[in-house]
Length: 261
Image 1 (cartoon, rainbow, N blue to C red):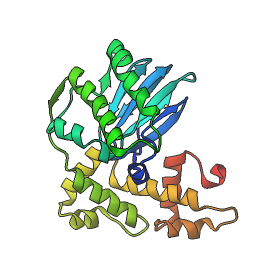
Image 2 (tube, one colour):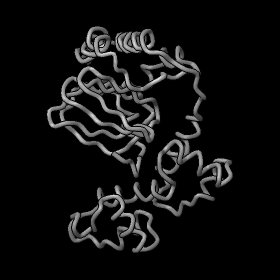
Image 3 (tube, rainbow, N blue to C red):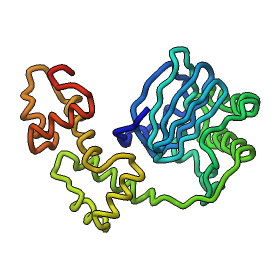
């Protein structure tokens, strides 16, 4: 499962109503967000790619995706999973306890511990409703993370410059239809083009040009209506030539706009 593109999901970070959900079979492209994402495989199997590494999970395995790690999934046809996506406001105690540490592995494979200790706690989260207070939610989320920390080892880790990364991605999200270049973005955030490119590629998993073109293609597809002028719309979403538009569309969707629509 090779990730060519990863895209930031700011709408995911804003959601408060999807703390934990059941999911069936699915194949999801590479993406990332500030939220921690935890997948408990209840049935079947899942192949995932997280920060350029491949992971295989079977029933009662857990995959812990840290904040801003690019990740994609493909499951077996019989898969059933619990997806735990706590909002940042619910993770403060956990993040404080972690400090400058991270889990030694993001694949939690002690099936007995997962099934007997962590799964009941995750299922408790599925029983929450609108009448439950923020304090109750924070408490249950903290217990889940606490049990993970008690059992799974951690190692020292360098702090990522998350605030800077969020600012960069937000800026790109607001301006990708404009003429953004590596030099202009590097200057905007006080980096040399070389160091900006190195930092961006390391965190996002693809180069700046591909990332911006991916956003433009997604906006093109969302905006397109039958009989729209493709050239006019391609320029509106930020492309400065039709060859570059067609090349980017083919890279993302592996077909031409005509075949796609």
